[in-house]
Length: 346
Image (cartoon, rainbow, N blue to C red; front, side):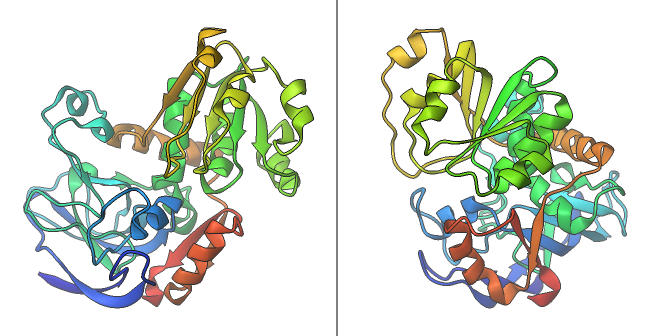
């Protein structure tokens, strides 16, 4: 076992504090990673504050991990010491169900293991990236291309793949009109990726205060959803709307913005149920859907895509002592666009 420093929430809604945790010994197929940077995802806050249900404490959040391999097990073939690597939201799965065999580990029906707030196959709780080191099976590690800096790559391991996977699945590309709902940590990556895929991109945000940013990142149009005229002007416009917001929405209003056969896909997850009039999907044969992260192979594909197109996340680098303040700023939408912890400060 290796003792490492980390930042943990000792209980639900409690401030995170510096502590130490134990990492398992490096097994035959394991990779030991010196974590360099860890992104702060809104889902870290949901889980640390038990917004999505009962959680495991103490909790070390963080599933946007970028670092360097410092040790490999004797059976490891994919990575070597010194490799630049990342770890996203999963550190294991059953590997035997149909979804795992199809490269859809994120939808594992036999029990996937989240990077934190989960229980590993050894029965021990999993701890995430707000820490100095992590030990992960090589099959759940991805390679960070040389064209991406580690700090800007870290948020791609959740925010990047969470937007890339549905944009690819619902065929965002040339000739398609795509709206990104919400211009935050996920939304700004959705804009970059949808633009790079060749779609005509519109941002739907509460206000116009981030309009200049949205257009700079690749949006063709930018509308405020607080303006009722937006819903009249854009009725029946979009092939795909990707919702990245975690607040409850008037789904009927947003579904009215879709073309016939259009899809409204949720990647943001509100803590409370939402209402829906089913005529909003029946009229126009529309789809209301959701999407998780991506599988390991698709996550690698996304990293390679971002490197090929020359972009990572837009980040604000912080020290570990600023984590609690960063949480409050995320809730206030006061970040452009992803906080990343410099783990050398833990």
